Image (cartoon, rainbow, N blue to C red; front, side, top):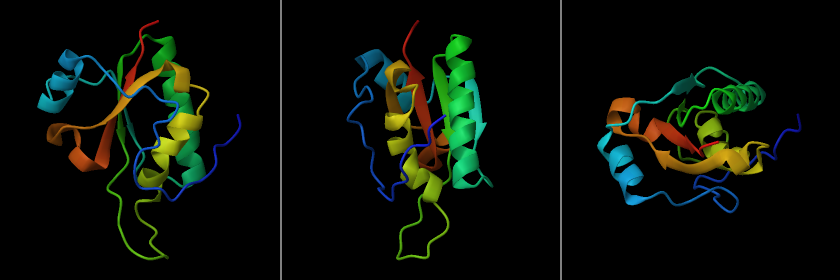
Length: 128
């Protein structure tokens, strides 16, 4: 499994990830009425361990027909280096775009407050 390039970018890099969902999906995600099929909490993991956990979780979720993965990254902490917190959050969009699973990802959206708000993301997977 090739590791994606590390990035310090804060915002999403959506060049190869799906960026649109139909209005119904977006409304359900914004309202928090969706229930994630799979949840992955990355707190306490190193960058390498987080990348491995994301790859394996997406592999299992796709194989099991899951549609929504809740990825708990923690909040990005702004500031000059050496900021150690928030590095996973800063890199996750680039990781997903470079992932072998990118074609299976329909969209990545911020999670509702009940699912972690700004410290979490919904990864919406395409149907098989």
